Amino acid sequence: MCIIGKDKLKELIENYKCIYPYDYNLLDGDSYVLTVKDETTLHYLEHKNLISYEIVFTPPNYVAHLTAKSKYGRMGLSFLNAAKVHSGFIGRLALELVNLSNDRCPITIKRGDPFMHIEFITREGEPSPYMGEYQFQYLTDEEVQMYIPILKSVFPNYDELAKVWFKNKRLPP
Image (cartoon, one colour):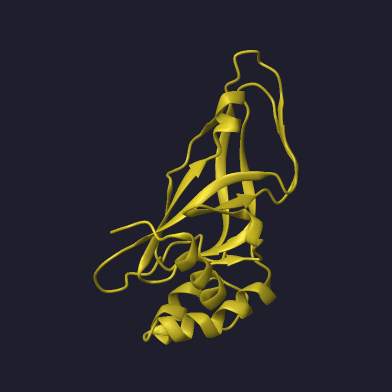
């Protein structure tokens, strides 16, 4: 396992839309800096989910790891969710936060603010795609349809997977 570098990450983004949309300026060394979809204010001890603006797709031979920008930790935001994005996951990420600031002041994160680093790590072995209930979370029907050809190209057993992925969705596989 290894973290992929900027050149390989750029290839993944261009070939598989693993970050969509993406801004070249947000490629940060060996990671991409995800931004915030909607402005959010957290009051002291308040817990909220913050949604990424970008869609994330983790191709079959990768997993992704998240780390918060230290700026927000210094303000007193604590990140509650796991820092892993499963292989095969597609959707916007829900980042679980709580405001634990020492001065007990509200913290506002604005739409488009750089917020979270995502690093892609190679994995070995047979693909084991994400099959959970959050597949395609916070995506429009059109965004899901944009990923269908990519999924068909990277998962030889797409038809079998689609039965599970679309079981409770409005869209046909």
